[in-house]
Length: 429
Image 1: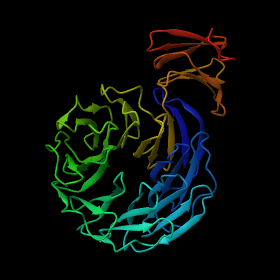
Image 2: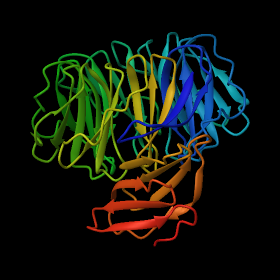
Image 3: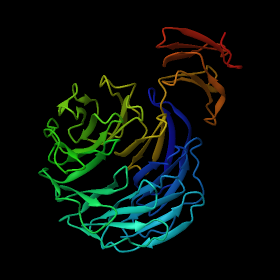
Image 4: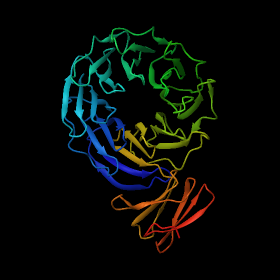
């Protein structure tokens, strides 16, 4: 496996690569504080990585006997839960890598999805055995009976933001809502409407609505308290919808599809916002909003990641190239400065969200400008930041350049100014 760090707009690599996994990456997730990434793979392991250095933290987490399909951090970042084709879940200490609970046995087929409750006390799992199960995260004991009702494989599970409900999607074309406290039955009838398998679900930030995407080429929005569909079905995609994501504002939804596009929708009007986001040369597998809601990232079977302006739909910079096979998963870090991607090429890659970059003439340093209004200088051999950020601009930095002798850096900004900096001291000249 390889981890690489790149500039989002230019695709220039920073440091690395760092290798590890021996087979396809199935899932990647950031820790809540954004300092680590956990990855799961068909090599039967879970691995933890330091985001700032790209180094693997400790040894691989061994224990599963088959592909590890899903991995997630607990809300406090201290535990990791993993689900596997070996029909089990395992709980790991995120600090030491030691297995603290498991195997959690009960499922009779592949475990496809795992998620922690908001308070970290419980874990929910979905399986190809058509059931949803809830587990005590401290003891590893199953809580109550299996939640039965789906007629086909469960594809995704998630707790509501308040932890009172569990939502599951399935190949039986339904989304179901379960009472997380009783774990005895679903709260209401299945959320029915899709004409084919439900592939992806996403909560609005306030937990009042769910968006679901399906192989029936549509996106639908549901009221979590009543189970009723909200508004009209969102039509527009011409092929299977693979991924959906609510924006932090709870109004916009992004959807990805095999039709090679990303589309943005207004959930209050059921209308598509602007034109499709086009650029990928193959199906789009994954989509995510930045925490600020200003950007969207997408991963594709064309092996690239792309960044889009959420308000304009315009592609930001060049495609992020480096993966050798299809990209299966993309995610923003909690602070929005990095993107992690997983791929069938057995790699996890980390991309640094900058808007401008320049290489010193001797090749020893990189200067980058960012949406955070700063300029930063980096050592090309180590990937480490040199000195403090260069602060002074009042808007995003759009362009940077070294002087021929490398002693100065010029930066241009959306604040309509050009500033000159001493590259050794970081002082504005």
